[in-house]
Image (cartoon, rainbow, N blue to C red; front, side, top):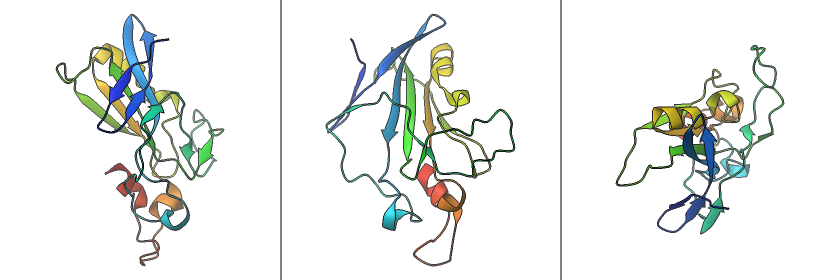
Length: 167
């Protein structure tokens, strides 16, 4: 089976090709973009990855960040797989995107009032936009609720970690 690949300096990311309404889109799911915000990093600013695997199959939907599970919106699915280790992004590209055929990039930050939401939601599936719109779509998870926005005014919890996740 053919797998599209993105070649980086020290790594390769493999995805899959999706057909949608006559359009072909490359999909890369669950790409880690920061160190896991666990343990001593729980309430800290986002930390750069220390290790990047030489090859990564980006085929699985990543976990949602921990969040309050009672959404006020009836259409929102509360049964998401959640984890404190949740700093991942998803990318969709038209199959012809390349350094010589550049595309516009939509970097989508999901809503939810900084309390709930995730790139797992079908609403944020970038296949239609990448295909029909001929653009690159990137969606990003960020820490929510107390994990993303608690502050004690000290170095242990300086606050706004969720915003640092998406900068």
